Image (cartoon, rainbow, N blue to C red; front, side, top):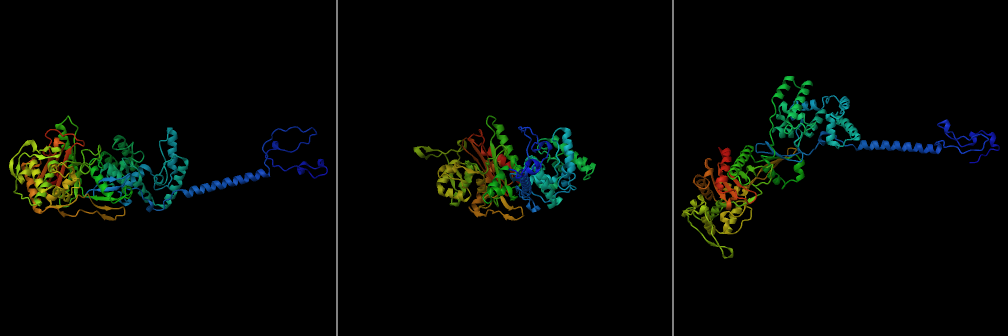
Length: 640
């Protein structure tokens, strides 16, 4: 820009030259007064003029605004929990036996919510002593613990200690991810301060004790108490509380199931901390440690797994699958925990006996169902010899040929159609035309025939040819209708082999049919649930099976009396010794399946032994040899 002065040489340069703000003298852009010809000046740095200053101020203002906005957005976007009522975690569906004792769960996270008031006083104190001794004093973040942990970590050269409080652990579990970053730690601290101002210390402990993961799939102290000790948290002894309180730091490394020595060492540490903090005396700590550990074992799977899957399938007819994992349902069932244990032992012992007699074949499987004959309620259900290896429920899901165990249904149909109990049939070889012009010749076991014999004797000795002659007289349609009325839903082949039990059925259905014999002809469909409670305590009664008169009381009484003779002097002699026992054996061709179903007092119990694939059990492994002893083993525990 040109200068308007007449004689520019008399005007001081600053009035004529553009204005500059100099931060440093050596960066001055002032024109030289030297008379020497102007020379090219070296680069003297950036000049801050008014234009640049305006841009800088605007940029700074924008950055400050952005920073403040980002900070405000971050703070307002942090998760919030305003009251204890906001705590709604996924809660397991708890399966209870008929005496309201837990036997299994349906869960992705096994958790049972328990009110803070229900915990024994020493239980929260054990966790405070182990995890956060200054819990009752700090405001969510314990600066002293953080500094101490940082010092110890620097001294050890590794991150061996953390300074997180119980409040921070609750914040992390409920509101944040497990990402390891400074931003997450800052959010954790801010939210912990908030949480301390919104909830009481007891409410924070309530969440913590129900939320914390304690290993073996157990979330919260109630689930852990049931998993490790088979009892409620309110029933825990001091040493058991201390062991659980030692788990949060590393549930896998201190697992009492897999790392017993490490778990005991951690237990000792917690007991000592409780004594140092004045929660217990030194003598109490020493006594609790000396009591050792009595673990419950894998109570949720090996014993009740098959029945739990059956209950789950029934619940899914009413509830969504997501509800079973999250809504904290409590399902009261009909099963008896004592009888479940007796059934499992009987099946395992029976399978071992068969396996020991035939070492050249794989061990077989076994299944058992016990029903209350007067109601159809399931008292015990074992679907295989080992649930942990194979979850296929052979009591419910497997349809197998029942052999002669089907004959009582045929005899019931005959008596209901007017066949006299005193009728005499010819137990002699029989030849009947079959498809393709061939002859079909049903045979008795060992090809033994007794000639003319009363109907009752034919059932006692399980005559096959008499059964076929009887079915010819009754008619296939009437036979099928009788079986359907007695609860058999499997497809029954409409031919004479039905008399010999050639159509596969399930153990549960056939056992329920036998229960009608013991219940004066009144049939009840099997039922395994009595009621469902939700988390709020609302009770939903489960539909029970109404009784249905499917055969006359006289027919039922005759069958019971005759099947008592089966046990006393017929094919079921290996089941004798149980007071009031009656029942019937069943064996299929090549000894593929062995059955025994019978009743005593209020129970009707069915047993099946066999292989999942068509592998013979071995020579001589009939229903009387392989299945009846299992039935007797169980029933001696059930009724005597």
